[in-house]
Length: 563
Image (cartoon, rainbow, N blue to C red; front, side, top):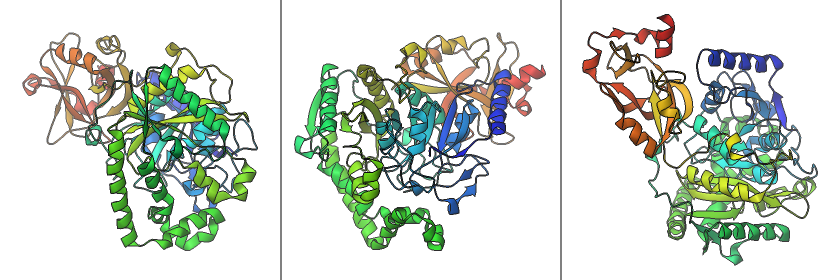
């Protein structure tokens, strides 16, 4: 029960043909022909979105922005995956389409709610997948299936086109076999979405100092606050994880886990459960009988909360955040078991609420506290099932987590998912995400395949995506330039969307790159079609006097073709 709906052969061939056409036209396709899967609470154009509730299903007219970005980069969507109904659960069995089973032992749970997305990656059916994460749904299934689960900072990936669980907390998450792959996918999928009221730009994030990743203070709960619910094998695996970090030169610091634990309890025992009702209120009012009994029971608990309790919950959360800040002053990153134990499907069916709650002991607080998280494979339990750990950092420090995770994953010696394939050499992987990467938009001679592109690739620049500007720019073919170059200026009226590429350079390389740019070119801030703002090439206005206006062609490549 991995899939709810698979893409037709005709759809896959059409996607591949479109990616091939773009590639042949010179549009970079960094994910060319890479297959991926999408959790079935995220819209994919032309496919049904069910949220694992057949009566709720609708046919999506448009893909979510995250899916659009990945497909524009050449990735091929193979279908929609199973989940705990309306993303309510960490178990992966709460679906009328059947329980999604663990990739290593079908008698055990896969974890949820992003169950099918995780198992599809672990089984080698796709190279990566999209999930969502409100309470741990992008992390627990990763741990149970020996894969990587990246829960980005809230608002960095658009949540437009996602059936919400708790809209103020939801994140689109990424499953992959390696940290490098997860980072590469996030780079392409990230972008400010003005249609998402909870979207954030990088500059909107708290400006927390990025620590030295070679000597970190790793926060771990006090011994009496670590719970494994009788699973001594999981406890032993976590002790081994701490030892690995010590050998890597990091310092284990014990912290008070109480404020994080109390925040976690607010998610299901506090007023945030009412937000789950708000997400599907009209459908629930009309068709509550369409829900599975356990899903209906969870969402019905919203009736126990009123507006006053919502404010009381906000006050409590703010107080807990202050208490948590005291702990963060002592540490750089937190290390936790992703889940304290794992259960069989039969155990979950016999005690669905309590055991599900146990699984969220180390996950439920993360979005409430506005933190980023990365789940990593760490070992195997005595029963042959995977065990994973999660690194947690402050908002905006996703790149730090990937850097730590990349190093840690290489120390485990584990194979990839359930495929038995070894961790490949670094050189064979997609590039890692660095802490100091700066995006720069190019519109002319620095485009891929053009004469000056080497100025980006030689210092290690990586292509993020191909897209367009906001419809507010004019493009000119500058005379007497070698090699031929365009000049782009922002205009008050008569502007258009101009095709460009977004690349990334390290801060050091970016500084040298900018210093080498001759006049009349300048580096300014460019607004992209989706509202994201990046640094990029603009032209001094005096240089366009007498230059040919090529705005109507929509980009430099189109001009070169027409010329």
